Length: 454
Ligand SMILES: [Zn+2]
Image 1 (tube, rainbow, N blue to C red):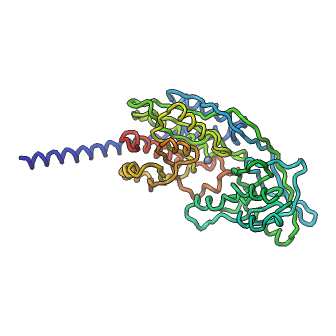
Image 2 (tube, rainbow, N blue to C red; image 1 turned 90 degrees about the vertical axis):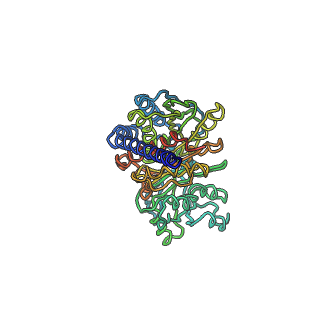
């Protein structure tokens, strides 16, 4: 008899588990079905890209973008939509150009200013070029060889690496720290080869760090980096003229926040977001208009599929990921000062291509629990749920003990578009974008429903 009872109990447990699994499968199927049939987010991305390109912090278009997305989130039916105000330094780029002189002929180069590059005099700065492969090389050359010159960092992106983010990480020091090191040794300006794998005509901008003084710092397209390098081999004393007109300001700005109230623990937040700013030279479709829309989709998909969220879902469209990362810091400070309970934070800021997985900055135990749900996501192309960073905007929440996650889509083409004029709405595939929205919503649902992080 006892044996029979035990058997029945076990049978019921297994049946229950099977039932729960089936229920989850059905819920995820509903999320994906709705995401794949809806064109709303994709269309809104088109509006954002078209009406507010170059929406860098402090620019007119950064405010246009916030207005556009605020209205959009209100229309989606979020319970509360508000602006979290803060003040931050900003940098406005008016123009940037460069040309090289060969045998008295002026040849224009495809360049753009790095943010926040210093300005040149009106007629530009003209000087000899010294080409280098690394910051270390600049240091070894020392003041004697660098003073009065324009330093040209030309180490290429390593295309042999499968993970392009790794290649980016290996090359980006030339842009992020290169100009400051050049300045310290007396250089009058700096040129950095665009941090991208392909050979093309797009200059890719990005952030650089100066301490107190600044010099003009520009990026050059990979094609023109090759051209300049070849010309230097023939004409050792070749000169380049660099012109940058930019302005440092302080601005009052906002993070845009939209909440969908939770049923059981409305004071705990499931944060999901992307950044609303984009560099001055681009529509910022993949970086990161798409992250803003995919995050907004989490609200729409919960509402339209009738899913119940125990905790409140909080969409945050951060201002200023690109230049000073002030939006992410401002939200973390706001959380600290107002004792906001952020239970979990997800970020989409790595492109909107075919979904590949999520990186998770959570405890070992939480990671183990989340991984148990991998079989539910695998049929939708989620290949990995692995330990890794969350992202730049949610990074500051780590100090407050928040569990983080970054959405990862296929990375092979991302750096063809990153921070350049090629990052347009036309580069976005609606289906790939929406598979990402659905994956993000599914993971948020599972984490909330089964209390997967601690
Ligand atoms: Zn970004």
